[in-house]
Length: 270
Image (cartoon, rainbow, N blue to C red):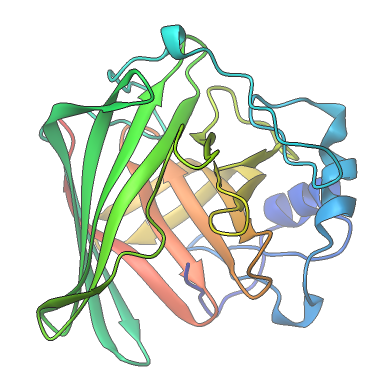
């Protein structure tokens, strides 16, 4: 989740005017925008009401029990959503200058599938380093339904200090301890769509909102246009607030949070 010092484009301002009741974020043609730090904490219930005009398969509405519209029999490990492609062998490398040092991330799509609640899920390995030393290693599990929605089914994560695992907090799996799946990328995202990305009460309650469908962004890996931007937040961590830029045929190219900008450096999507 990362941010950049720039002015806002009219397109993203218009999108936010339609999708948000108060908090705003934006971008410019040379690389993106940043969350509005002065906007304050988001009102989750108000945002849910604003987005109620269009139902999503993983509805975010804190006033009602979460009931995702997902059929395990409809899920496949073959993930072809153009905004979140995950063919076996694909890789992405990211880099971000943070207050703690240079953070780099390596993501790869693993060949084997993992059984999650009876679903053969595709595993993506996500390894994070700080100044060259491993600080986190996560295996995320995804599957795609017939409508192109990419579901997030859980993760096995470990945090490291000095090369030693110090925590596995944040791990969760659909079907264990009442955990439920969320959507990582919608099959047909529209501005204002609001959706849960994961759900384990009190532990994993991230949700996303589509704020733009046509942004231009430039990162070391290249310049991209027509990108979809989501604003990702957490129902249990009010300070968590980031923008993610997804570009067709590539996936995530930029994540912004505060004054940190996590950029795509290199990628290979077969």
